[in-house]
Amino acid sequence: GENVEQHPSTLSVQEGDSAVIKCTYSDSASNYFPWYKQELGKGPQLIIDIRSNVGEKKDQRIAVTLNKTAKHFSLHITETQPEDSAVYFCAARNAGGTSYGKLTFGQGTILTVHP
Amino acid sequence: NAGVTQTPKFQVLKTGQSMTLQCAQDMNHNSMYWYRQDPGMGLRLIYYSASEGTTDKGEVPNGYNVSRLNKREFSLRLESAAPSQTSVYFCASRKDRVEYSPLHFGNGTRLTVT
Image (tube, rainbow over the protein chains, first blue to last red):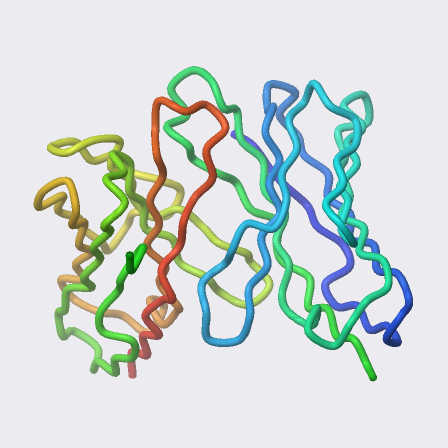
């Protein structure tokens, strides 16, 4: 099955700096890579996703890049703000076949943005 | 539109006790999922239901059972709780037949087994 590794486990930045979180996956058939943000006491919420036919996707201050050859993808947050502090999860899935939407998640990154 | 609702929010059990975690979604989604979240291990799939009337095991099903009561509701049962089942449990749903549709999560149930 799929295995997703996420690094770093904790990340501390100053407000205004950039933050980068990296994930690698093992199953070359995976073609959908979402990122989730989890605030304290809440469930994970989708913030951005990318499909395997795209190399990069941006949404305001966040962007995701995908390298299919190396089987890794990254989340980039620019101009970080204190409200970006949360746990971030990457995930991978083979969106076709009989996967029924079963996502495999990374271990999570605790991002702290200091004012 | 509440999305995915989980009850209870918190629960403390003694070893050997049983309980059922409830989940309901109002988005007319066909697929529903139960995940557990443990520190340093991300979210791991316990069971899922691709449609009403069907359930299948995920990555860590031992010690759990599920029931897909109807299209809206998907419950998770611990028959004889063990300390290893101390975790935060998340229910999620997805609009299937849309290949890249995301998971929508509830706010979780924090379970402690002593």
